[in-house]
Length: 44
Image 1: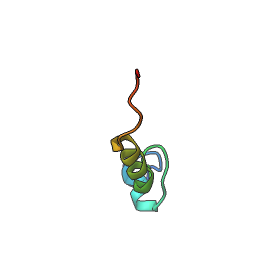
Image 2: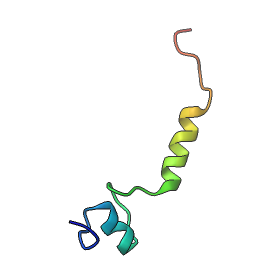
Image 3: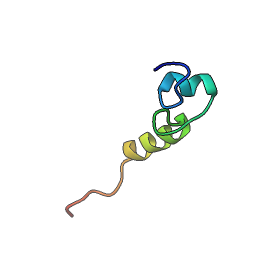
Image 4: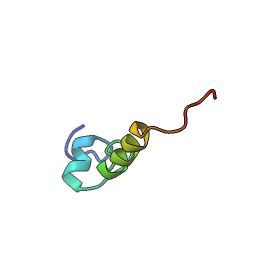
């Protein structure tokens, strides 16, 4: 397992593809911003 294996992170980096093993950063950034935003206060 390594650079030739498309199921590993290294293999995806080498091929330039994304997937479950190597998610795109822009999606993670949006999720982090949504979690950090002050939303409704629950329980009121």
